[in-house]
Amino acid sequence: MSEFIKNMPKVELHMHIEGSMMPEMLLQLAEKNQVKLPYQTLEEVKSAYEFKDLTEFVDLYIQGTEVIQSADDFYELTVAYLNKCQEQNIMHTEVFCDIRTYTDRGLPAEMVLDGIESGFKKAAKDWQISGGMIPTFIRHLGVEKAAEDWLFYQQHTQRFLAIGLAAIEVGYPASLFKEIFSEVNELGMPIVAHAGEEGSAEYIWSAIKDAKVSRIDHGIRSLDDPELIAYLQQTQIPLTVCPCSNISLHVFDHMQQHVIKKMLDLGLNVTINSDDPAHFGAYLTENMMAVKQHCGVNDDDLLRMTHNAIDASFAGAERKHNMHHILDQFEAQHVQ
Ligand code: ADE
Ligand code: ZN
Image (cartoon, rainbow, N blue to C red; front, side, top):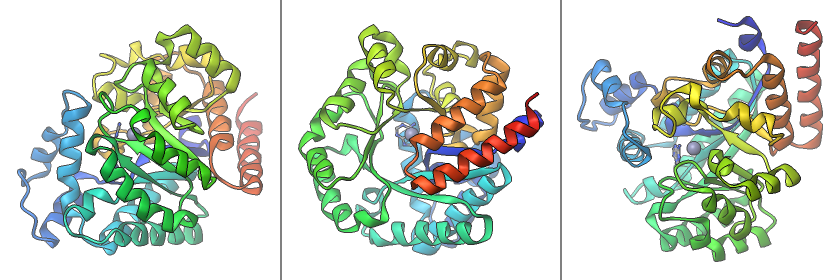
């Protein structure tokens, strides 16, 4: 394993909290909350974590969330992920969550926020990890549900870093949610959106024009559109790229075909992230290892993506300055 990558201070901007639920925790919470799952053993869970595409993945992902039933469960899940962050030298992380999956089952929305927030408090105190939550709209459930969720989210904006858009992309461009996003923008809340993961470059344009996003999650399909490449070069809108996710969901057949190096060489504002590390078998360190091994990404590129992620984060100016400094010190010690 590359010691450089292992020890490098890191930042993660694209990680769904339920996507960090390892098979062990899934089974343990299922037992605790008496939820019947279609698998009983670790091997059965692991072999279920094979996906044809994003739709199949999202279905299984949502099924797995049934085992989470209280703020305590969210706390446990969040602390386990943040403990992993500490092991991987992740200084700052911004995690996606949603309430809809739980409110539709009659559970309170507050349990999601309370549990995750308590986990971040512990990580700030014990491990000096900063970050917070980005609640999302589940786009394939449609605009009415998103509007209801927005009614709740707007009462809690001070607890969030931004508002996001996730789940099944094709058929659900950001334009469908344009009116909600204009209200989000009016409140001065930043917006991020999954776009150009399975969907075409048009979905990225829609996120830019209709949602006025601060960041694009994925954005890999931008390379299909020269005009969009020029726009992203000029505006430097950050892209939260998730290489191992793209392989697991068959966006590319093999890591060697991934376009991350090409995006970097075009001067796009690329960051590297894990998306759903439990499901895709790769946390941030492993994503960095994979692109170094297969895509021609070198240590300088990894440092550059981490500086990009610091700047693209929603951390305050002082924390950003402090993280750049930590990374510069690491670089001074490790790069000749
Ligand atoms: N929710 C969890 N992971 C996701 C992904 N890769 N794309 C869209 N929604 C998601
Ligand atoms: Zn994602």
